[in-house]
Length: 351
Image 1 (cartoon, rainbow, N blue to C red):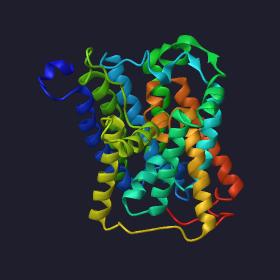
Image 2: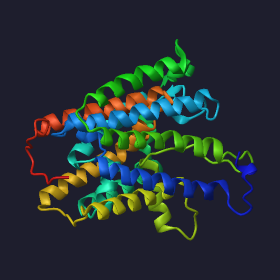
Image 3: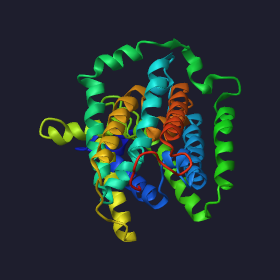
Image 4: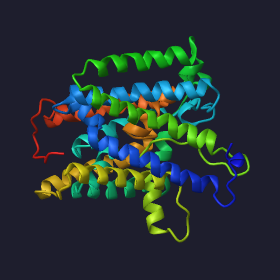
């Protein structure tokens, strides 16, 4: 469709940066206002309300994404999240590691990005270390670990996509979205908060449609992408270091947009304040969590947003397994650390 829009100098890749900036800014603003975070939904003291926000976003994301797929606007047939060769060991190990890491750092990568924009230096420390480790796992010294774990696969063929199961995409979308919506509506959140959460969910299909349909150009193809934070942070790190040699892409624009949107939200609400570590022990805890999320996010094929909020709506089994493993890792880590009930065996600062 892109070639019909009449742009003479703007390429699909360049246009994707602007699209990502808009989506990212909206996500940053909405996520800051709603305290959007899966960790809080799993082990937070206010997990009922946090789960309602997260699941409302998921319900809308699933419905919108599959509506676009059924309408023929996008196709996940060849997408990595629906691949028939399932890297089961990497998905489970990566998810468990990521879930553990986000408990140690008191937030998933999306939440830490939002917190960093609000002056939280702990979050920026984690994000920097996480991005380095994730990049090393993708293309650097830790690549052998990724290669070995990803080599253990289960061949499922078309069955790796729930859309091919009996009942088709509408049935399996309903199986996921309706219970999520029911939990959200009974979570005790105010209607306005749930509306904001629904708007977060709507950003997911907008991303898929924008990159997979609006910006589709057979002569200059780009990857079909939506909200995520693993690859975008590694891209942003690489672009920051070598911006004169490489062009920014969707991921770079997304991270920039989230930071700007979250910053604007915190400034308007008067919530911006500088925060840092209180003890060396806390620094070590957060560093360990950053490393686990860097390795785990790459192995799992995404974070709570990339594999969860945006990945589950593809109906790919890999995304569902990754998300389930992340949740399991977070719950187990919180139990070991004594945080599930609101107490902690280790001193941790508030979010």
